Length: 76
Figure 1: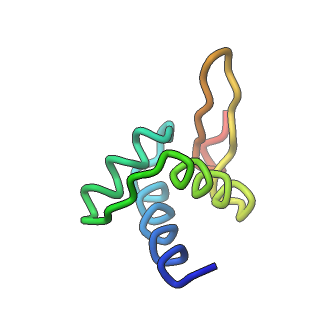
Figure 2: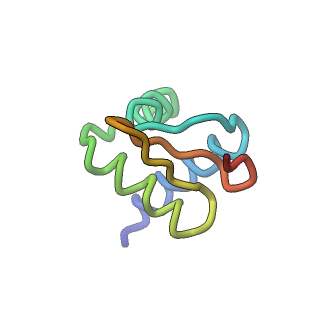
């Protein structure tokens, strides 16, 4: 894992902790853009969400035709 990956995921983890709510790939894209990061691939956004899930920051929710994540302490 590169320093860029770590830095990007720290930006996302900080936003998740500060904002809470439901996290989708679209929200990750908006978060990265507002932080001035150029991360154009949906796969990267999805991988970052899964990485934070493995790290215990997020909980994954699978609904019909929809996947989203919430902060571990906000898990439903």
